[in-house]
Length: 230
Ligand code: GLU
Image 1 (tube, protein in one colour):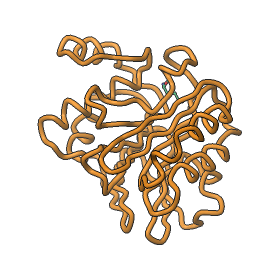
Image 2 (cartoon, rainbow, N blue to C red):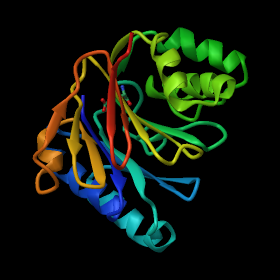
Image 3 (cartoon, protein in one colour):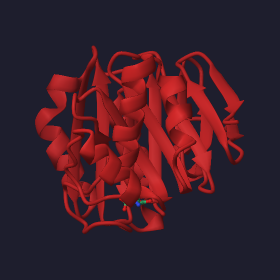
Image 4 (cartoon, helix red, strand yellow):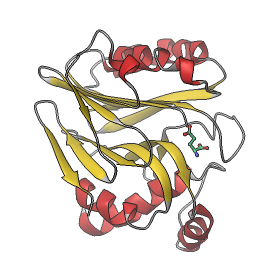
């Protein structure tokens, strides 16, 4: 189980994510990635191997995403599928609008994957995680509300997970969910953070909120709402 970082605020998003991931390196990992949401467009950058590979990849594209105000990042410890770029997180929906990172294992991913593939969702990785993206996307297409879609989808998942989720059409929030995998929220001034552990937030904030199991947090720039998933 590896590391997650999320950020919403006015600072340089990619820097916050990459620094946060660097501080989680001690957890061990085999690949990494970040997704930025800039003006309703989501861009994903992923690399296998060391974080330095992701830094280099992002440096080539940086000017394009300089105005992003929210993003999520991940270092992966592969449990389902090899340590390839395709399997690295974030994973994204077929329409390119919904993106997520995940720590943990989705136990019932095989049944869900079959069901989603039969309904026309196209998978691009071998991971258990990608099932969650398409599942939330399927719910989103029905209710057009990220919080509702996440709650409905999570109820269909078995296993252990911490998720950070963003949607291109809901640029005011990042959603965080926790079940049997650690996740914390860092409270800042006009900015908020999500992380799997405190070192990711060193130098950013020391106001930490620990999510309890089966809680969902709707993290906006100026407020954080926490609810029981049930
Ligand atoms: N089970 C997921 C995967 O293999 C997440 C692994 C992790 O927690 O890093 O991609």
